[in-house]
Image 1 (cartoon, rainbow, N blue to C red):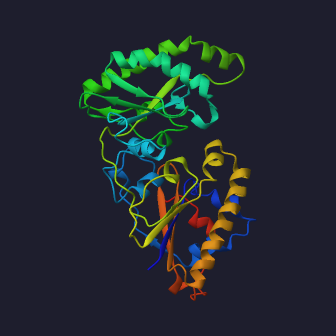
Image 2 (cartoon, helix red, strand yellow):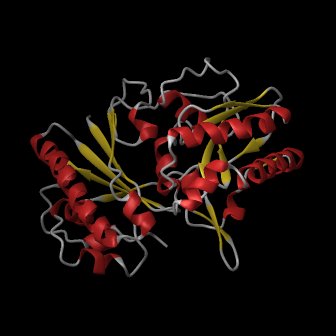
Image 3 (cartoon, rainbow, N blue to C red):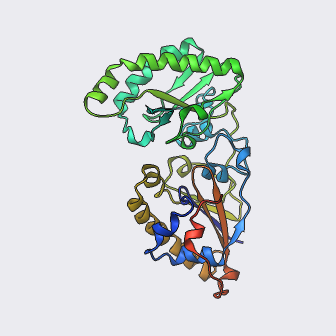
Length: 330
């Protein structure tokens, strides 16, 4: 059997909103899933507390995999190249509100390579004094290791974008939580008056005022259980697959940016592009190249998986609402 999992992050919207968003859009492929699809069990998201729902779906068969190490591998580094690279750091920006500190979307930082290098070099001695090894792999993603075994885990940054930063800080042994908070505070103080941030603020750009730590600290890295993986997401595009599976994975990332910015006009345009991509796969389903497609839609907290089989396409009398398919479950 040839099966495809078609994963669409940020494809779910709040209840009562979807009908307005798609009222005038022609979405026959999504309509097929709404009318003829059957629900597939979602993974236990509580078993993946460090991952977003879309990440949890991909990692559901390899729950011990360290997401930071997967990033490291996807960026072209061998896990053995820096044996201590067990966490990921992402330069980011938080905004202080009236009642909470909100994490901004790091994509909006547009951090330049030179800026990243200078900030990394300013943070390096502080991290080294605390026993951390820093590898600044790309401007947006740095990696950390420690010689001592550490009980400390941080969630994927996607869990926290637009939310109160305090609810998503790294958790673990109280002593290591305290040590990391102190190290981070020292870096923030150093960056506060750093020339990079002074220049950014002078040119109307947000300062880099926090480092987001993610990963579970382990060296567990399993190949993903797919025969093929098609994705333009940096995390999945270079990920290793085990092969030998009847299932392949394809992701559509176009809804994520508009959803995070609440740019619903762009979200609608991206949904039409997603529909066009799905139409190709539905054509393969009708032709018998595929036996089934599972459409996986997520938001920041929830996930809906709907399976459409070739054997059910003839059930033309069944009707469902596309808006209900796109509505986040309660």
